[in-house]
Structures are given as C-alpha cells and as structure tokens.
Amino acid sequence: MRLTDLEPRWVSTRHSPDLVGVTFLCPHCREQRLGVLFVEEIDRDGLPNAVHWADQQKKWHREGETFETLTLSPSIDASAAGHWHGFVRGGEVT
Image 1 (cartoon, rainbow, N blue to C red):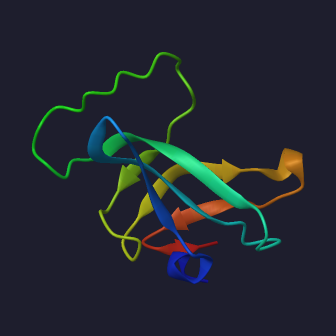
Image 2 (cartoon, rainbow, N blue to C red):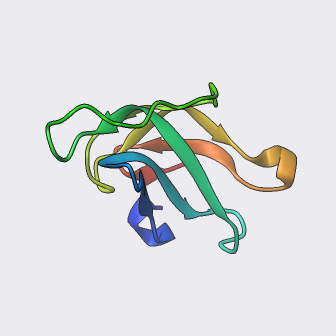
Image 3 (cartoon, rainbow, N blue to C red):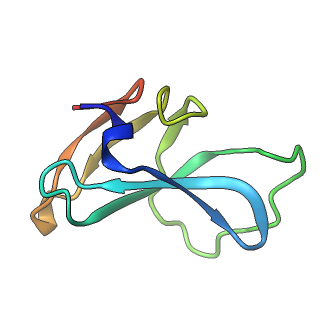
C-alpha cells in the first residue's frame, strides 16, 4: 500500500513554514489518523526553525521530501491503542 492511499498531511506550526511531521490514516482501521514528528524537518524557506520543542517527544528520522519518497525510522507502533505497527519506506507502507 502506498502512503498516498492513506490521505497523508504534512504537519507544520504557526511559528515556522518548515514541515515538522506527517499524519495519515491508520492502515489497519482507516478511521484514526496516526502522526509522527521528524528529527530532520523539511526546510521550506532556508531559515532556521523558530520552534524549539520544550519536551523531548519521540521523533522519527526522515528521508525523502515527498509522500511518494518518504522513509521513516524506526517503525511506527500504535499497536498499544489497537492500531497499526509497521514501516514507511520509499512511500510504501508495510
């Protein structure tokens, strides 16, 4: 299944145009949105990000800058809430 099949949306903040994460429909139920924050944000303006995250939430390493090429690591595990556990690699959800 492709990430683009799960209605992905970029996450940004009102303080910066940079893309700081992604959300998408759970591949398991397709009702709940799952989301992750990036360690490597997508810089859209060439300026430093004005947001300094106060807490150290878990963040995922990102490669790729489009939904079609996105790779995230480690796996995304929402199984404790009854949702999907798997990988996004090269825009493919497994």
